[in-house]
Length: 217
Image (cartoon, rainbow, N blue to C red):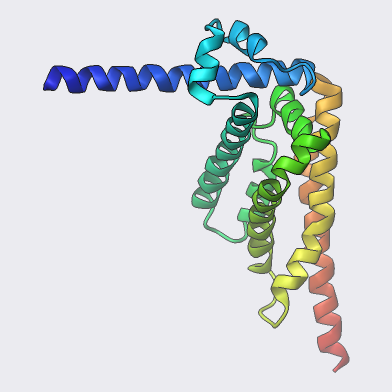
């Protein structure tokens, strides 16, 4: 019985490793050739596995792409949860969340290229639109909530925080595109500092507006 259980455990780990290898190989092919150049044969060759194993583990190209999307999403989820846990202080959390968007574990030319494949290819965009919106909304709401904690306690602070972070989210989206285009020439640290500076100015302006309203009463 113990031998059978040990064998099952080994087989499970082998299957999981093969699936990870195939997902990473798919990311490589997508980053290099886009959706149009993706074939199961190229994925198998990049992973140094038989084509039949791609079909065995994923069944189809569409299911393989869905697995890649979930894999990238989980990486971002794990990083986001790690950041929220590591920075409980509301004064430090917004800056940390901004930096998380540029964390080297997810912010690489290879992975950025694949995100843009999902966003730019019409068929993939339609297939994953709802998941992508839910995915993005979660992070935007978390950043907005962290900013709201810094604002004066009054009705509508969450809505105000959402408006304050809009320019920052737009900047981050633009920086992701720049990073994909410029690769090694992109200045990650400058992008983080610029996004933080814009958020700081947005919060300061909101606080000044609150002060002016109080003084005018």
